[in-house]
Amino acid sequence: MLTHFIRRAYRRPITSTEVTPYLQFLESHYSTSRDWQTSLLQTMAAIMASPEFLYIREETGELSPHELANRLSYFLWSTMPDEELFQLASTGQLMERETYIAQLKRLLASPRSRAFKESFATQWLSLDQLGTMRPDTKDRQYGIYYSQNLEDAMRQETQLFFNHILEENLSINDFLDADYTFLNQGLANLYQIPHEGDSTLTRVALPSDSVRGGLISQASIHAITSNGVETLPVTRGHWVLHELLGAAPPPPPAEVPALVPDLNGITTVRQQLVKHREDPACMSCHKTLDPPGLVLESFDIIGRHRTHYANGQEIDPSGSFLGTSFNDITGFKRILLQHNDDFAHHLVSQLAEYAKGRTLNRADQQLVDAIIKENQPTQYRFQSLLADLLMSDLIRNR
Image (cartoon, rainbow, N blue to C red; front, side, top):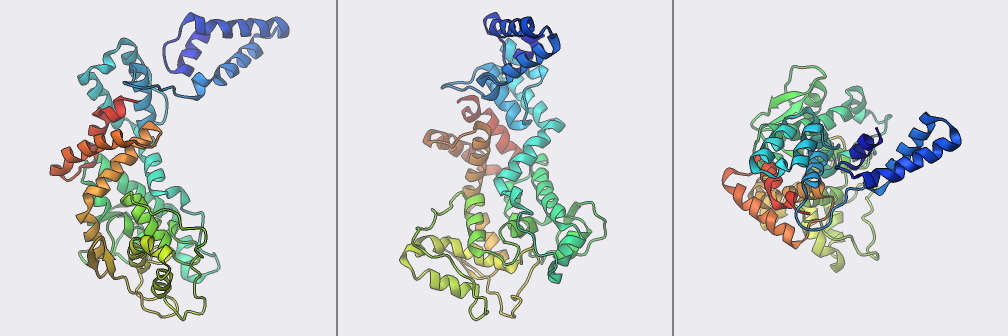
């Protein structure tokens, strides 16, 4: 029984030499307590305090069959390998190309892969921040947030959107702009989109003139880049650069004062940011931070589209980003699509870091470049990108 338990805990074959110390511990404990159940539980606790249980050991070079089985299983299932994967690793068959491909398909098709979809999407898009800064329950203009249970709907919209693109092997360009989303009646009311439904979210085709479509038009993203009282254009700009393009600017210098909102409503957010950029220490970062942040001012703290602030000031969403001018959110999304290579590179890098548990180095980035080049002709279909990543040395090597 101990041998079987240790094998499961260590996630690999074990030797009798590794079992002996725990067997001796068990017998020693029993000789004192005369209670086999307590002695066995204490021994199992000792096994689970071992570094072999707590950590996945990886050195350098190609992963061994059991190390590869662990990486695949923890990446796609967020748990240890099942018996089939374990046996294929024990016989070495997992290293054979056809067997490996078959196992990738099996792991992805399994209901257990839901753990990857939920966990990766949450970490990549910072969805765990949703609900940490809710609107004031007494503020009537945000009453729909609570009456329609929009927080759960927002999270589900983004998660279902992610799942759909992966499961249907659609282009990751849909993350930047799409002609569909997932709505229930509450979200449809918030978005002012005609919809006949209930509390269940379903795939909905968007009107041709809709400002929705893609991640940056989803309420979950607008909520997590607000503080529950006001929108945060700098935070929103940082979210676009960091989460979509992998080009987050460095933290501001310590001596630079924070942007203080004009509570009297005399100046607009845009005017405040223009003033902020007059400081040379701020200009280099804010010239790329501000345009995406300001275009997202078209959405309030719960993702409702707006053309004016509450004080009546008109919102100006225009700007210039990456050398191209835009007038509104639709034009801005076109620019993102023009730079979909950067987005694809960042997404694959995020997937690789999630799988490997570490930051990619320069050699790793060269492998990412090769995956991107291979998938350019097909416009970066998500499942194909993921499959190529899983087949690459990024996953098969340490």
